[in-house]
Length: 591
Image (tube, rainbow, N blue to C red; front, top):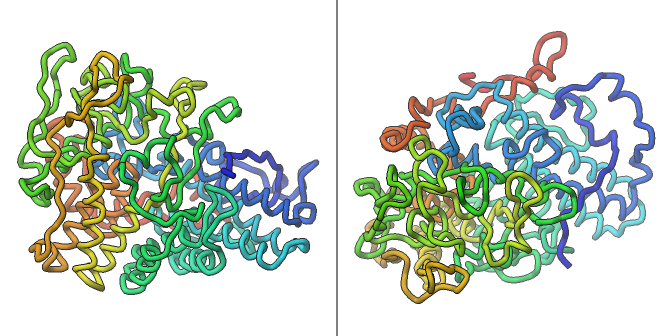
């Protein structure tokens, strides 16, 4: 049975967070019980706790809980990809200008995007804490059921706090026992996040009660990821080793890489063996809006006369596209990928003849970035400029992983709003990510041979015929299917035994970092990877210098060390935390 995106409209004073995550409220409002609200005692049953838990899952999409839409998207496409050189904001200079500031490292605490993200995560935390509090009062649950529901709630709380931690660093810890909500943000909460995931790992089983709910292996993966961010590489290795040997998805299917890379972004094939933890999305949910259908990415479709109508955001960068060039052995150019440009149609009208790049490429490029003359899934060959809002501002490319297929659009797209929604799940962690995290831990504190083997598993899938992009049988009718002719010159190889790249820790890490760039591009990871690796200032400086020759949107972009590693604590939250005019919260360095 699949878990549908349930929306529980429950008026609960226990969901209040006082100063955390609320724009305005009076002390009297918080002190007085709401008429008709459900008390903890009423909800203290297995059914009530389960309902609260599903409500905690429902907050994962970031919609209708934090005052934001794309601002609070769980994909982190703005904070994790646009800010890191995966993508340009897109559209034009005057559309959603707060993103321009985030993309160029010039944001300040008054940028409302940060407040929306903060509020969305603390809403999820509030709901998780409610589950934990009420579960303690329930008397009709078996110990096993109570342990499972509590473990799921702690997993979800860990997730929300992880998202806050990687974005803002020092954030206040609010748990189910907190009564004074104006807590300082002076404590490093990594150990508490780790404890939540460890508890979930220890108390969940192989199978979840429903697809979309988490199991012990999702908890193990998030625990391993937490250890990686804490730089506890030696502790992370056995966790990842156990996942790779024994891990299963929530339906009990052993983890593995799908033969088709693109299946991870096709709602017809979601919750497959590569799914570790995903936010479940549903099109046409009957809610009257697209909040359950990837509303956070509603801006991120080709513009102009495209079949999507709106809105031209989230355009892959030239730097990213060039990264997919390969050498004669099918290996990436780790240091010199920008020495040659993958030919693009910047400044070329769609009606003007254009020949695509003929050099060697990794096919993951053409499932990640839409480019002129290459099949855009089954919507026809990407026509170039007429699908781009402003090439001079944001370049010639279009996003692709978040776009649904034409043949299944009646089932998996949602056009009830002014911009599209879809049923494409959001991968928070997928198995390819696990393999690359395991490779990183091994390179740092284990075996370079193991690290190379994990990277090669990812590259092997990239080189399979099922991952290649093929030309259409009939260019005038893309729905007629695909031919056996490759759409580009795809050449992907694996690192051979004795490879000099994996002969040292330094060069091995460079290859692993680059593989994460290729495999996980446009999935909201890169900014946080660059920061935790300690290379963000150098890499972003190179990116701004190179990419600014093509577009105007990142002019003046900078990454300031000891500042831009984290985003500012939202000014609205600083103000709400004040007691006697003095904020309880401490602003991040440099803001």
